[in-house]
Length: 357
Image (cartoon, rainbow, N blue to C red; front, side, top):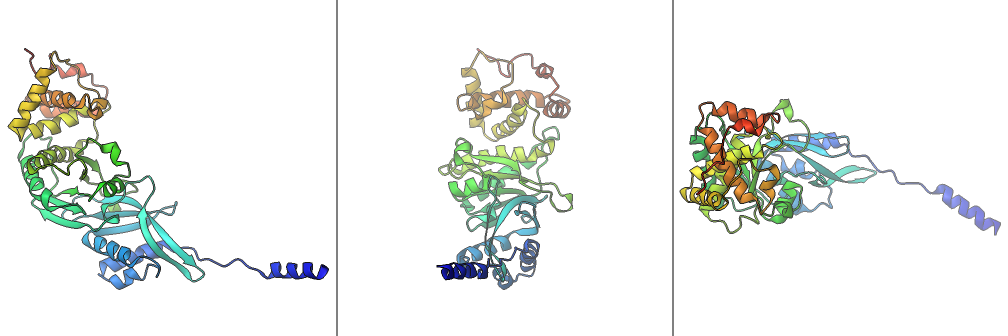
């Protein structure tokens, strides 16, 4: 019995824990950038483990070679901050992603690069993307870029031609992201598709982590909701993008002060109504049907409330239209936009934005 115990002790004493390497995340990040800069797909592939999906590695390469990946910076939590842009784009988008490693005693290789939990993901991290450039617009994504190209170009031309008290300042190239489906959209947004159930598209600043190289500002991009717009015709897509490209062209003003979302939404809606007499008639009718109207602007929450949104947009477009007609329109709108301390009474509308019977 004693002999057995001694033997057991010897066996335990001789066992050892396998040594596992730690990822050299900076070297791998640099290897990706170098491979892209030299168009060296073989070197890129060698950064991935043999067990990594060849189709996935090929897909990442094809997506990354289609854009301009400027840098990858390791973060304290193990994630990577990626900085990238598209042809002709002003500014640099930043997104956090997660390198996924396979490590053994010989070292660490990538198994995949995935989205960072709770963070919007770059569109190139998902399905195979295409990039299509038209006049003033670059479309990117796995969705059908062809059906968006003409509406996007028309909208860019219309918004660029408008002189609205110097408030409209479109970029030379507006990027529009077109996810393929709800899963792709959810990954890009870092949120459930149900959070955007009534949203055909949205404009946001493409900055979901870190500081862009050389202090470049992040660009305003438009993301299309493929579920809501699936059955939209060309005219509907055009008007949607006029609205969103107006948001992008006024992003230099920053986000409106609390309680002043009606200014941003009203200006975008007013621009859209200028592009469509039929839509203008429907908006006017919505105001008439809601009489008597209050002179108080809609609350920020009204724009996301299905029961209040139509009237909120119509009221705001009419009110902004009246402000634009003033000699000092840029000053008035700019002050209201940025200053939460300016009372709504200073609008001096004196009445609801339209007359009632």
